[in-house]
Structures are given as C-alpha cells and as structure tokens.
Length: 253
Image (cartoon, rainbow, N blue to C red; front, side, top):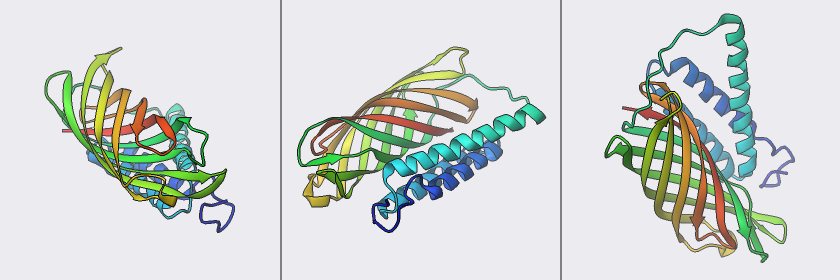
C-alpha cells in the first residue's frame, strides 16, 4: 500500500527505476565527453526519487529498490553487450585527490531503536558535495542533504520525517591496489532542519554527524564512482544511530 493509501502498487518505485536506468545509460554514453553529465544525471535521478517520497507516493525503501533495479539492469545489459561487441580500450589513470563535485544516494537503516510509541523506518538521503583538497591525501568539503524517513506509531504509518541539512567535512584518501582504486575516510558534522514532523516527533533543528569509509574506482581522469558505509548520528526520535550505505559519482576538475 502506498503511503497516501491510494492503491497497493508502492513497491518498487517504477519512476525511480526509470530515472536511474536513464541516468546509468547517460553516464555510460556521455562520461568521456564530460564527467558533469554523470553527476547531472545522478542528481536528476535523485530528484525524481525524493519527489516520489516527499509526495507520499512511495516509502524510501520503494525508491531505493527502484534505483537498484534500474542500475543493476543497465549494468547487466552493458556487461552482456561487451561479451558480443567488446569495449573500446581506455587507459585508466591513477586515482588522484582532485577537487570535485559528488552526487550521492544513501540508505539510512536505523538500529538501537527504543521500544516506545514511535519508530523510524528505513530512510533515503540525496546529497550534493563539493570537495577541495588541502594536500595529496587530505581535504575539506561542504555538502547539502535532503532526507526522508517514515514514522510509525504502534506499527502504523503516520507520515514522513523530512529534513534539509548542511554539513562540513574533512577526509583522508589514499590510492590502493593497482593505484586506480582509492580508500577514503570521512568525518562530517552539520545541522538538519526538519520541515515535516509528523505528530511533532522531532525538534525543528537537529545536529548531524557521520563517520564513514568509502571505496572508489577511477574511470577517467575526471570521473570516479564508488560506495561508502558508515554510522549516522542525529537527534532522531527514539533512535540512537543509523547505518549509512551510499553510492556516489564524483566529477573532478
């Protein structure tokens, strides 16, 4: 059943699967022309997914599943195509710490929930991050976040806890394996403004802190893709923390 109770076709989100399919195809076809095609396509797909949640047409888990279906089906299609037609030889450069703009899609999976009247379900977050290196292995960044988590009372859905945030972060990175992979550790801190608070379950403002580790692959001099996992801490109601699982695309300049 959809959050707005209009019908029972909530899972998975077809709009999200279409949007991330298009984003993945556009990325494959256009990234050699400019890495910003990739981050723009990823950001547009994020916007579609968040609109479906904010409009209460889907739960966050629905759009995350739709995104996974879109990305996986496209990647499988390209993998099968390469078996028959091969792929042009590309010289992949070494992973460098360069300034960049990152589009990121994250799942928030709560743990440590208290047994009280309210509970939070799996959430989704879309982020846009600007990174500026301060040395060969370290840097600083600033990010914008839009997130949504469903609120349940005695097992029944009551609404979405929606928030917008700004954060500052510091990171350290190093090249590993063949030098085309990079391992990164990140610490972020900032503020969240909750603009939808069902039943007043959260304060209007909350701190934001996350600790994470990421692994990325350099695809071209100007583009890297990867994922990260970490722990997200906020003043969420009746929840101590959440596991943060993300995938990202980074256009470097």
